[in-house]
Length: 301
Image 1: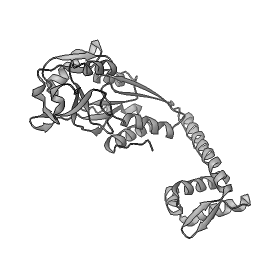
Image 2 (image 1 turned 90 degrees about the horizontal axis):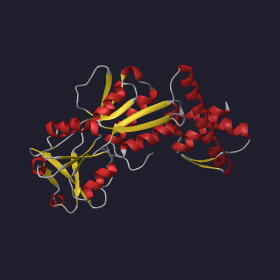
Image 3 (image 1 turned 30 degrees about the vertical axis):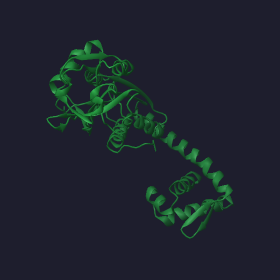
């Protein structure tokens, strides 16, 4: 009984409202009040001082809240782990994401997921579209944050996350950096910098040239650091997407919008996973990605 009462008490304090706590607990407000009253009677001390619709904690209440917050969290973790073991589920989530992806949404999703499932280990791996595709195909990844280049397959869950506008980052010394936007054809004289390993370069170049329409030559870098060094030295421009809370451009660079025939160039991002590998962890992580990409937040609450 103490654990149930402690959960009610913690929920009321966190919500700062008996009414909201009752909604979160799916019980009536009177049931919440009765449980906390019974808790105080069992402890033989007051935990709250009630004044009309407001309340404040007594010193004993503040101590009880701090200790119970941790206790309730630990109890929830024990329940989740027990259920996981009973279902024979793996407590390891393998996530893949595009090397070019720079938004804060992935960081926020990982942080929130780890808060919800502190006992689940997350492995992250970046790669090109093809590397992530084969990672899912070979069951090396549970879920991938990827762009759409193929028709959706019935063997996968294809959760569309966003269609953000494509931007380019370019050296602030370049004359194009003074423009707020540029037509894609106007980039024909400047190299496009792509993140890609040697084996995937032809595929990436074909996609950026034939599908997205980037003209001219291409330069390749295997890491974001190497790409940014090429960028700041004025050797080309780097395509990025305005997804969620996009990080600020690096020192010595500017970011401008790309148009194609007068309209913003866009790219579709999705969360992909094989249907037979879907579980609570995968679906929760996908929901968090969609939340943070479509509703950018500056915090990780």
